[in-house]
Image 1: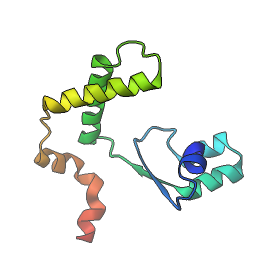
Image 2: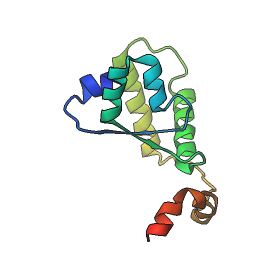
Image 3: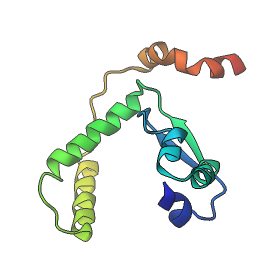
Length: 125
């Protein structure tokens, strides 16, 4: 996070992070690792957005990353250039073949299951 704020996006007024609900993904973790002044500075630049715990898109992303790991990254790759080339090749092949995830979680099921996460949106409309 220090590199994100100071090196990658030093001129950004705000950096929005989308992340899961892992217990270390909180402001408190910064204060455990950094001096209070630095933790405060990082927190002023970062804005956390948490995914719903039962987010279907997250499961799809995890499925795709698992496929990448098993089908492409299942061996030692010696350098970053080769790694990038292998991943690009894998991605082109999957896109060319139109590989899809057979997802059975329908929109209606999502509305029912995730309704409690969207109470604010319902109230404001």
